[in-house]
Image (cartoon, rainbow, N blue to C red; front, side):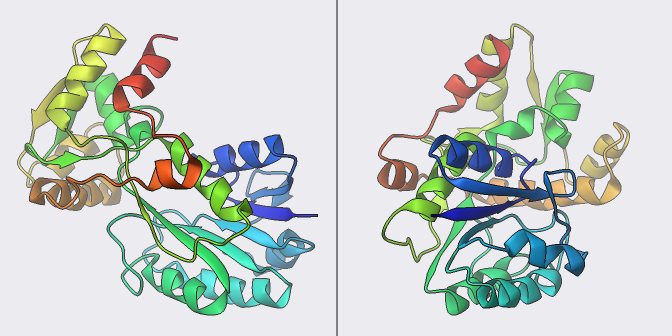
Length: 271
């Protein structure tokens, strides 16, 4: 019987992956600091119990850690020793194998496991809700404030990432690749704000900031300084045009197209 470890099981993608696996009748070990199976990347004494009896795993790197390989690579060694044969890693569209952040883990998974996938999604649609800095800004100022200018990105719903992850975990043939996951269309933040205005019933604008003033703007809203600085770098990427692309990965792997940002916004704000 297939048994899957899901790390970050209370998070944005992990919770959705765990739920979809359970719906498919798969035995799920939902692991995290506040999950049924206690798991902490920085507490190696929690690792063996999380891996006991599982043959596949969905891995979410520790958030905001610039060097996740320090804790993840020993875990991968242990997982292979414990009999895990398929690993699916959540990375992001900007990080190639061997690159910074999860890039080293990406490369290691491809080398260590015969069955693997590294999912590289672009910007999450969920960034405009919950605890993300953009959502904080919307609630406080009725604006998304960025230094991305007219740059565009093909925002993706976390539910679509989860659908791809489940197929990557369960399909008879392993993906053995690092696909870039996008939504169906590229949007500028001006267009995002217009869709949110239409669907929420409240006027939401896109405030175009100079990169130099952006950290202070978000820090004034209570966003941690390191997060505010991170946003500047990410907005520079969007402004450059690198993320103005779409792929057919969601449709190809799951058989159905990804959700549009408009459909996401309608579900969130009109329900």
